[in-house]
Image (cartoon, rainbow, N blue to C red; front, side, top):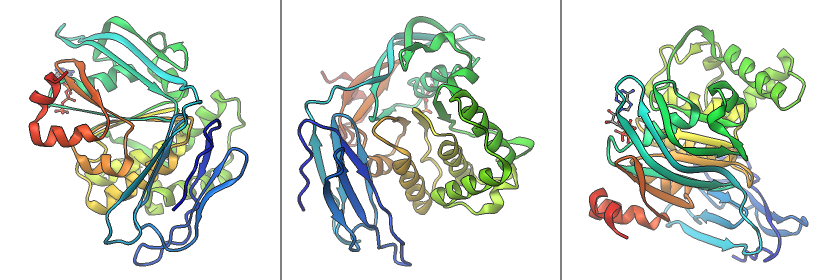
Length: 335
Ligand SMILES: Nc1ncnc2c1ncn2[C@@H]1O[C@H](COP(=O)(O)OP(=O)(O)OP(=O)(O)O)[C@@H](O)[C@H]1O
C-alpha cells in the first residue's frame, strides 16, 4: 500500500463507504490531496472495521485486510501545516457552587482543529467537572483562569450561546425530556444552529430526509424519532441518541463523556464509526473514557491523564498501555 501525502499541502480525506454486506465487508476507501490527486484508492473488500482521522498536522489511517488480521496503522505528518487552536484552556480553576469545594485546580489544555483528545483518569479526578465547566453547567463556578473557543472568551457566553457557537457535549447520563419528541427536539435545535450560522431554516420535508440520513449513520431505527427524548430508552439507546444529536447538529468541538460506557460491542462500533465519519480536518473531539476499546477505534492524537483537578500527564495512545499495566498513580507522577 502506498500513501504519500504531499509534504507542503493539506490532505483532503474522503471515505467512500460502499455497500456493507451481511458479513460486514465491502468498504471502499479513497484519499485525495487538496489538488484532487488520488493518493490512495481501494474498491475491493478491504476493511471490516475502519477508523480514520486526519488533522492539519497528522494523518492517521488504520485498516485491516481481513476480519482476522490485526490492524495496521499508517501515520503521516505534514510539517508545513500550522495547527489552528480551537480550544485553549489556561490555568482553569472551578468550584462547586453549593459547597465551595474546589474541583479544578489549574487545568491547561489546547485542542487544535482536527485533533482527537482523550482524557482518562481515576474516578473523582475531575474529568466530568471539566467537561461540564466547558459547556457552562450552573453547578460550577469558575474561580480563575481562561477558556478561549475559536478565539472568543467562552466564559462570557451563556450555555446556549456555547452550543450555538459549535460546542457539543454528550453527558454521562443523558436526561429524558418528557413531552418532547426526538424529531421535534432535533429539528428545533438544528434550525436554531442554522439560524446562528446565517442559513435558512429547513422545512418539514427537508428536515425529514436530513434526519433519516443521520439515523442511518448512527444505525438507529426511524421509530426513535417519534418517541419522547430518551424516555424509556435503554442506556445504550440513550448513548446512540446522543451521537444522533451530534450528527444532526454538527459541532466544532464535540465533548463525549463516557459515551462508551454501557454499550454492547455492536453499538460501540456503530458509535465509533459514526463519530469517525463526523470528524473532519476542521472539527475536533474531546472524549472522556476509562476504556481502551474506543481509543483503539477512534485513535486519539493526544491522551491526557487527569489527577486531582489538573491534567497531570499528556502523551499519545501508547500511554494507555502504561496506564493499564502500571495504573494511574504511577503514570500521573512520571515526568
Ligand atoms: N455537583 C456536585 N456536587 C457535589 N460534588 C461534586 C459535584 N460535581 C462534582 N463533584 C465531586 O467532584 C469530584 C470530581 O467529580 P467528577 O465527576 O468530575 O469526576 P470524574 O473524574 O469524572 O469521575 P468518574 O471517572 O467517576 O466519572 C468528585 O469527588 C465528585 O463527587
